[in-house]
Amino acid sequence: MKCFSLLLASIAVLLSFSGEALAHKVNVFAFIDGDEIQVECSFSRSQKVRNGKLIITDLETGDVVHEGVTDERGLFRFRPPDAFLATGHGLNIRLLAGEGHRDDWKVTPEELRSLSMDSRSKPASRTQTTWKTAQPEKAENSGEAKKAGQLTGMDTADLEVAIGRVLDEKLFSVKQALARQQKDEPGLRDIVGGIGWILGLLGLATYMKHRHRT
Amino acid sequence: MHVSEGVLSPAVIGGGIVFTAIGTGIGLRKADYSRLTTTAVLSSVFFVGSLVHVPLGPASVHLVLNGLIGLFLGWVAFPALLTALSLQAILFGFGGIAVLGVNVFDMTFPAVVCHYAFRGFLVESNALRVVGGFCCGALSVAGAALCTALALGFTDEGFLTSAKILFLAHIPVMVVEGIVTALAVAFVFKSRPELLRFTDAPVPEASS
Image (cartoon, rainbow over all chains, first blue to last red):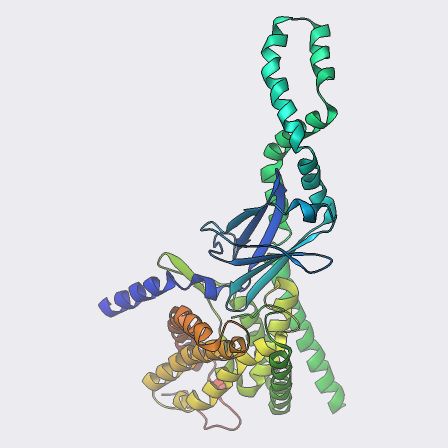
């Protein structure tokens, strides 16, 4: 019994540094968060990829746009260079997690458009600050007409940026959940389906065998 | 142990396809069609087995079960694992279709070698039967790790680095697989001893 406990303890110690090579597959997914792209890498829902190598390339030309390494939580954040955003191309994010584990995620040009808009509206964000600091002074002059004046005084681009930022914060968890769902782990349907296939092949082989006899 | 798509060189992928095709051919020629159901059941066990995580200390291991399949099926393990790994690639996204040949060979060939090395133990005493089952389960996983490291050795990761990490990582799995295979052999010998009768091997006696 003592030997068995010792064996279990040794296995548990060995397991603490063996997790990554025991995984079946690796997952990478990414989404736009504010003016950056958040990349999340994991072997399973709970097992994150630490120090996984990321190579970000242009989806059309294949040129390397950015490179990086995931942190302890399997995360990596980056912003593509403005020169790349101006091309209107998409991105391919490749994760190399070692021991034959690799995965890709594509970020479409449509998704990147919000980043391009952010970069165009950067100078406008200063105007937004001015508007915010000017707000208390204007608030002194109460009344509907004055409020309307404040809003009309705000540039449409500033408004878009402000709304965009609030939406980004609110939608962060939704985007994360949606991205994760695209690379979900096997479910009961897949398992039952697979066993069904094997049984189907067994039936086919049995039929072929009996057909040969007759 | 499932190598992903796009990691290996075309030469390694080609080699894997050729070796797997040869193994599958031999397996189909040697197949005993009266044991088709057993083959299908073991193929299903392998298909599902890798989803079974055994909690062990702070982490968990998942079963490979290539040794168990190899011990019972011999060369027939090639078509059985080809089916199971194809379905895992299609339905679960484990590995990939292009690298299927390499993945099948990596997991099956060591199991077939272990089958011929340890099946003689199954007709001996109870103790030897358990030892044979344990060794077959454990060494099949070790062999699979070695074959995967060899395949990765032709990529930029290098053989020694890959072999070291894969071998160390799979030591706990080897122990668990050895225990599972030994228990399975002991159980099958008591309940269905005919499953351990190989057409080209000595017949075990159920009374021992």
